[in-house]
Amino acid sequence: MIPQQNMQDLSSKKVPDWLVRPPTHLGIIMDGNGRWAQRRHLPRVAGHRQGAQAVRRTVTACRSWGIRYLTLYAFSWENWKRSRIEVDALMHLLEDYLDREESLMIEQSIRFRAIGDRTRLPRSVSRRLEDVERSTGDGRAMNLTLALSYSGREEVLEAARRMAFDAMAGKVDPAQMTQEDFGRYLASAVLPPPDLLIRTSGEFRISNFLLWQIAYTELYFTAVLWPDFGDEDLKQALMDFQERQRRFGAESGSPEPTSRTTGA
Image (cartoon, rainbow, N blue to C red; front, side):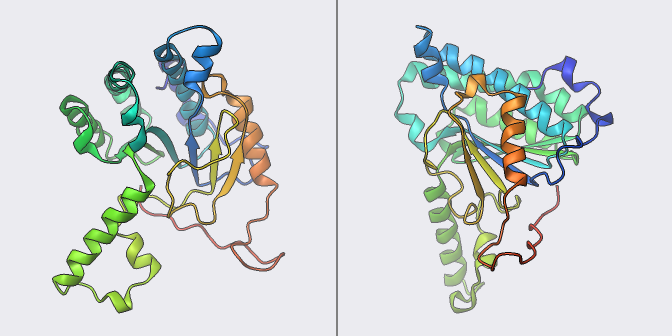
């Protein structure tokens, strides 16, 4: 996803002057690949291939601009309803990405993770995900997470199941559970809550993405289709984010709480 010619000198770049208050964690719902292809009378897979170019640009910019966590909604639980041809093409694109970019992520200290139901993924994809997670595990400069076969509701439900089993075993007392305690059961517990969530393509919905985590996330919607999303579009979203006052339920003028962070 990250072109070699753009990645060679990223470690020496600094956060740009205009990015005074970057989000610690940026989430993106990458939407519009199919419509991009349809408008050009191309097969949908052509839109997904072009969307991969937008991923390259975005990962490169975020790594360069000092954004520590980037989570991309790549394939939802509901996407399994699509045609077999399209799903197979998406799985092949994912494997190509893992094969092509693994060494560059290691070089640039990018830690890769995937969240979602891996039992539904092809075995070859699951193996490559595990391989790349293991090989990039020492990355500290940036955390790149792909949500694959992912459902926010399923993540919360699975967390509730795990907590219930622990309660039955006497490991936890449900009456004493806090939001923070429950959050540790989530598959995404290693990630801080997103500060900013971007959705492309002009749709105004969350589509079952990180439902627990985005309670106080700033939302940004753009009509730009994902394959056309570039550095200037990302810059516009980040500049808009910097103008917002995040009160987290407090009164206007109160200092913002420090975002919860975890180890890389």
